[in-house]
Amino acid sequence: MSMIQIIKQAAIEAVENSSPMSIAYGTVTKINPLEINVEQRMNIKGNMILLTSNVIDSEVEVEINDMTEEALTSPYNHKHEYKGTKKHIHKKGLKVGEKVLLIRVQGGQKYIVLDRLVSA
Image 1 (cartoon, helix red, strand yellow):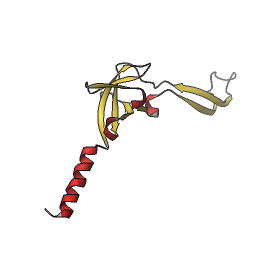
Image 2: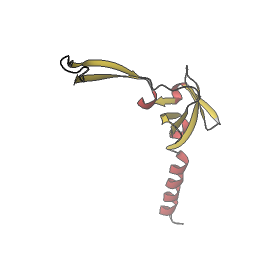
Image 3: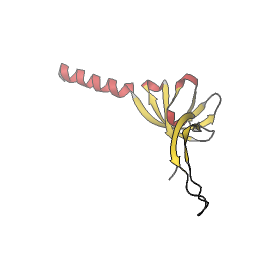
Image 4: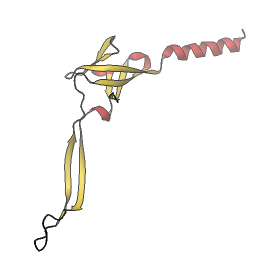
């Protein structure tokens, strides 16, 4: 084997062994503090877990500018404009027992919780 082939092979093996990231599945076992069992092998918690906006509660401001539908018939028609802003809380936080899709990052030191898994 030539020196170039040896270097190429070493580089390929280094990348394969470094496992930059991989997909995993988990089950939420505890909420406060958050703990997830990964593929029935180990539990992760604390700073090992990174959450995406898909799995946390969030506040959304909604702007409304609309007209009501007519509620009565002639001659007592009732219709008016309504508009304004309103804050809604989207309750997307994880619950015990939910299955989640994870990305294992850099040798398994951190896991990103991408989303919930649901069956079709």
